[in-house]
Structure formats: C-alpha cells, structure tokens
Image (cartoon, rainbow, N blue to C red):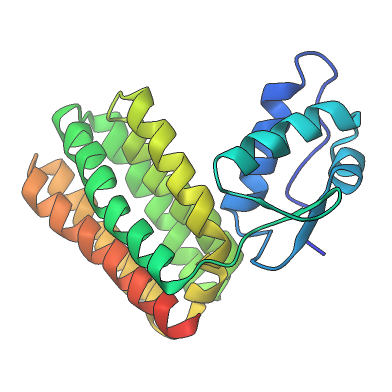
Length: 219
C-alpha cells in the first residue's frame, strides 16, 4: 500500500485543486511506486474529503497517462516499458533544457540563493542516505529552476513528464548516484551564476542522463 504520510487533509472549500496537488505530491515524492494501487476510498480518507474531488483528480491523472485502471475502482501507476522510459528521457532532455535556458535569461540573485539553499538540503540528504528526502529535494531543485523560466506551458508539460517517471526515482539510491547528481546540481548553479546557459544545459543533461542510465540498469 502506498505511503500516505506526506499528504495532509485539505480544507473544504474549492477542493478540486488542492486535492489534485496533494495527489501529485504523493506521486512526485515517490510515495506511490509502480504496481501499487490507489483507491478513491483510501485517498478520500487520507485527505479527509468526500470521494468526488478525489475521483476528479484521479480521472485527470488517468487521462494524462500518469495512472491506469487496474480493476473496478482501483488505479495504479503503470509499469513503463524500456521504450517508454527512453522516450520520456529524450523528451525531458529537450523540454527541461529549454526551461533551464529561459531561467538563466531571467536569473536573479534571489533565484541563485534559493538553489544553493536547496543544494545544502540535498547534500545533507545524500550524506544521511535519506533517499526519500533526496527525491523531494531533487524535485524542489528542478521545479525552482523551471518556474524561473516564466512559462506556465513549459511547467505543465514538465510536471506531466515528472509524474510519469517519478514513481521510479526510488531506484536511484544506487551507490554513488546521489553524490553524482549533486555534483551536477552544483555545476548547474555555478553556470547560472555566470549566465552561461550552454554550461548549465550540459550539467542538466548529464544529471538527467545519469538518472536514466541508473533507472534502466535497476528496472
């Protein structure tokens, strides 16, 4: 059964958006792994809401290909084929690189400082071997960059890509991977600080590529 401890009950008004965000958070943090099941009833209970907003959120995620119907009212994270993982990898390289380049063009001191603060948390998670904290911090790091692009369209596309691949990120605790990922993160920040979009892109591509290679080996 998925770990629901990272989600919290939502307020009663305007439930659809917060319920959707909470379920996305559950997936993005790796709390739902491939093959695990989700039900409207269990999520509604965890969120302390009626089934309707949960059903709407799950329907939206199913239409986006993030979830699939297992049986009856039970949904799950689909098991991706090697071909699907490869396609997601290639699309991520292109889309996330564009978002990064736009973020570099819009960089600010506060943006750079925020990334460095997140990196401190990522390094701490790496040293403690806390893969769950690393997954959450890694998403926050990348999301912060892509938000700086200023493009809601890019953000929407990237979120869907991450929702598809994040359930596999629990496999990335292979020896040495977290340290290598943080080296890429530091290189991205340094390139952003110098306004070097090309160098930032190379570091990002290396980060995504290393994760992809590890996932393919561990899958």
